[in-house]
Length: 273
Ligand SMILES: C[S@@+](CC[C@H](N)C(=O)[O-])C[C@H]1O[C@@H](n2cnc3c(N)ncnc32)[C@H](O)[C@@H]1O
Ligand code: SF4
Image (cartoon, rainbow, N blue to C red; front, side):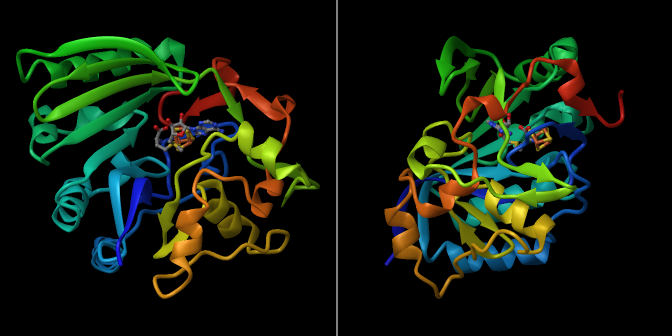
């Protein structure tokens, strides 16, 4: 049986060209590499028989650091022909790609996260190059899950330009080691930066993005959670999407443990700063 779900994050890159303090993908640590095309194909073949998401977010790290992102998007489109594919990017590397390419994947949404106010123009110029390829865009401003968003919509492509004011940090450091909090799961879930989207990460499914990223860094020393593989209890994981669970205790329950994402010193852009 296929599980119909609203959203699935699919991790395609571990590395990021930015280091944002408190990132849910732990990209403020030294992360390297991308998921190989072979592994992406295998994951698609396996999980497209199990999960039927309305939206698949292409996730990282920074997806545009994947040297074969065009093929990645094509493989994912072939595997889930009816899903909306949402590329989530910080936008800095859009300059490397032919702006026409973004209209070739069927329905695509591109969420461009603006991480530095002082670089907004630079990123907006890249968005403008894409917009210039077509006529008839509709523009709409709104607030989504607490962050400001500009939506630009055309036939095959929607671009969201999003700004985030606050990042709740999904970890704490004690003597250089990642340590779970011991929070009230309900309270932690209510302020979570990724409360309702499971992630496919190295061929396993996890409740949320921070989990596999923390486990990879921590080597399971202080965190005991295990991802669910294709033969595992996917039904229970799906039934608990958007619900607090005991694992949510690992995250903070108070906004005190958050980062002002508008402060320049909290966002380091590796090839610019
Ligand atoms: C982890 S990033 C990966 C994609 C890409 N590098 C980017 O920044 O858009 C995905 C989204 O998560 C958001 N994000 C990262 N850490 C967060 C946090 N602690 N709380 C809320 N949102 C967060 C980012 O702003 C971004 O929109
Ligand atoms: S750009 Fe920032 S939020 Fe996105 S993955 Fe990199 S460090 Fe995390």
